[in-house]
Image (tube, rainbow, N blue to C red; front, side, top):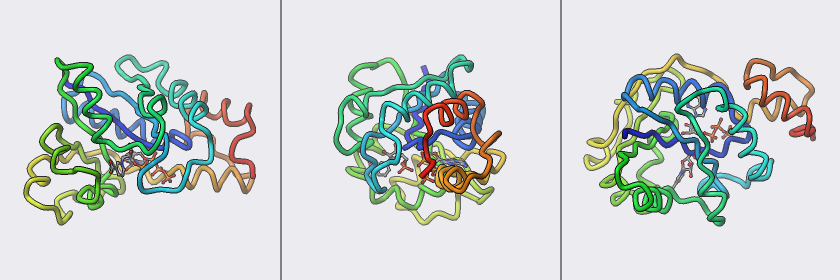
Amino acid sequence: MRTGLMGGTFDPIHIGHLIAAEAAMEEAGLEEVWFIPTNTPPHKPQPGADGSRRRAMAAAAVADRPGFRVEALELERGGVSYTIDTVIALQEREPDREFHWIVGTDMMNDLPNWRRIEELAERISFICLGRHGEESEEADLPDYLRRKIVPARMTPIGVSSTDIRERKRSGRSIRYLVPQAVLDYIEGNGLYES
Ligand SMILES: Nc1ncnc2c1ncn2[C@@H]1O[C@H](COP(=O)(O)OP(=O)(O)OP(=O)(O)O)[C@@H](O)[C@H]1O
Ligand SMILES: O=C(O)c1ccc[n+]([C@@H]2O[C@H](COP(=O)([O-])O)[C@@H](O)[C@H]2O)c1
């Protein structure tokens, strides 16, 4: 079964993540997409919201979409969430699935710096979605990686979790940038207010 893995900090999950996953499913013929919240992200500061809250928001966001689900193995494993460790664990657990890692094109030039990237590229392909409508071919990547990149189109969605946290902090609306259930969770728990 062709399965997309959408890793992210999801602090919080927003419509950019969901539309990217929807586009990856359609463009790459995936049957499922699993959203994997990081514990400690490898190349980013520690998230603002703790893992259980980021997981709850992701679960609320995908609850009404058959084929989307949250896989919490990185939070359960703890420590820094290297993708190679996650992929090895999932391939051992689910040998009949074919996994594809979904990334926005902003991450693509960073791929050569990922932990054990050559081994990772032997195990999976990367579905790269034009986050701001850019051409993914522009990336300057080594051949072993370029061969494993599947470019996919999506309607550009210029939203980021950083924007959402900043909007919330300054009292501006985040309605429609996140699903209603995520908005309710953020407001109900007073997240990102200071
Ligand atoms: N608007 C978007 N369109 C397409 N892909 C996106 C978008 N936002 C995030 N992504 C992709 O989703 C994955 C997880 O992203 P992440 O959770 O770090 O969100 P983010 O909005 O970039 O967060 P932050 O602003 O905190 O850095 C990455 O592969 C990223 O490229
Ligand atoms: O494995 C790595 O070295 C690595 C380096 C950077 C990012 N990643 C993964 O890429 C996904 C998106 O990362 P981020 O920082 O945008 O949340 C997330 O699942 C990270 O664990 C993985």
